Image (cartoon, rainbow, N blue to C red; front, side):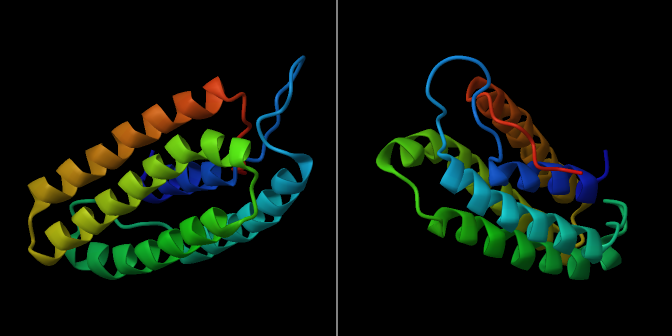
Length: 150
């Protein structure tokens, strides 16, 4: 999976657009899911409009692409954190938002490494983002949340 497609999937997950299936109370209210769904749809569109990322080895193209990606991702992460949520929803979302902060930090690491021409650093921070995304997916599954990626 490419950096952009992995990031699109990972960040689209921030929408947390699911509810529990089956018995029990949903961890997120319908009102929250509706707001998150609208925000996620716009985020996904903006990620698609950003276009395909260059290969990790293409340092010169990585810098401008990653700057745009960081601006987009941190902006939408902040918008999701600003959505009204109950205390229970905030408790459920806390670990998920922490994972997105880690992903955003890893993207910043990729940018710094790309600016320095450090291909090993690019790969290291990219792998950190991938590993965090894997853990995030488990968190979402544990919450029985659906993915908002198309």
